[in-house]
Length: 398
Image: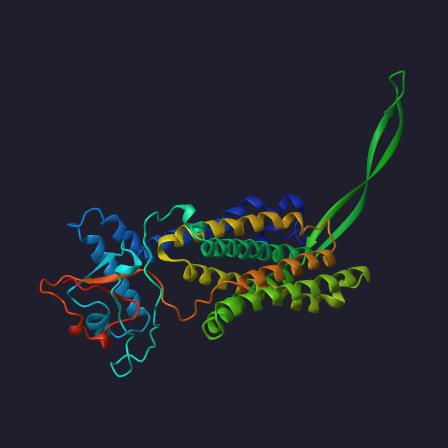
């Protein structure tokens, strides 16, 4: 819409378009999201605990982290009674587990039905890993299995970036009309005596482009539908099936769009095939948006807390490399049919990489535990496991 209002050359001359205004308008959402993020997005509980880990006497970070987790539990529909008596008892405080896996003495049972909360809490048997070396990129390659996971994530994110931005470029190319016009340049030929000779002309070719902004706007709106589809299906079908299905559907839709668009252009009958091209482009962009969103969700759940920031950051960097690479293949210099082949190939490879990632639907996250602060010894027999969440870890303090 912004491009139509500021850059549409079908109703304006080239010198009437204002690309500077277009850039300024596009930057407004970035500034707005930054400000809203600073105001509305809570701080990371783990980061707050790390800041006060060297100052045990300062409990402000632990209190802030606990408040954030309680607010999150309320927003997730957990009753206040369960929050106060089960998840976070009054005599508890948050600490970071720096211990080895063997030091975890017991993982508490999930909340059962009949306690006022019918939600099914995941039973987590994932051990709490040591946080030593957290943030070091070498931790992403600490074990063969971790190395394999990192490489699969990087490949998936590279394909994600390539496909998301590549399909956007491909759709723009599909709805771009190229006009080649001949221009005559007049000039005067001077003779050797300095007098004026005869007028002469020199013909040159100029190329201009016009965009079908209505079609591009319709296909761009498909990302909203892709996001809604992900929100309604990602928990039902799982993260991995949602990713693989989205990437494959998007690749096939782009491939068919490329073939059909090439045939339509060759027949010089673009208007007749416009509706079908819009439909295929709509499906392609919707699917790629769905796959991208699911990849974001899955990555943050796959990585453990101690390497989540580093792992997610490096994977995102691979996605940017994919977006940087795609314009060298998805370009107007290539036919739409060839562009469709490129997108289909990358989508199949990306789907296969995503297929080999672990499923995270219904799994617990995090390694933050609850540690009681009451002075009297705590016996395991006195702990009511029915009032504890499976993702909360307990240590005998006696």
